[in-house]
Length: 110
Image 1 (tube, rainbow, N blue to C red):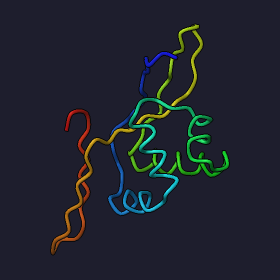
Image 2 (image 1 turned 30 degrees about the horizontal axis):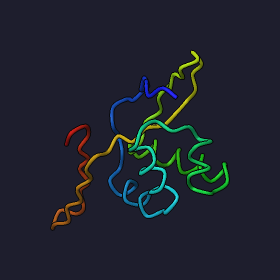
Image 3 (image 1 turned 120 degrees about the horizontal axis):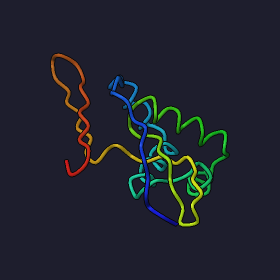
Image 4 (image 1 turned 180 degrees about the vertical axis):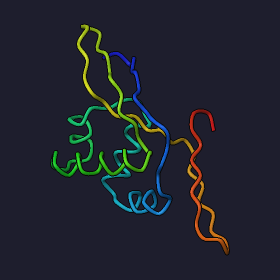
């Protein structure tokens, strides 16, 4: 299996509260961890989480909407390609102060 991937990410419009809500779900956290290891297909994520495919797709959509993962195209050695998902997060910082809660995401080597 090739690790070549091409992402289709757009500008972040994620709501910090929504990001925290998504991370409160065990299946979503498992998906986020798995996709931090490299692009994974929905089928691979279903196997990894031991959840139904419907549950995995709901969590993928929540993670996409929260800008915690991105959709990409994974190219296989045989020339075929498939939709996969990859984490956009290396570091997540949560700050709580008088102004409320803010979430800062660091990408790459952050």
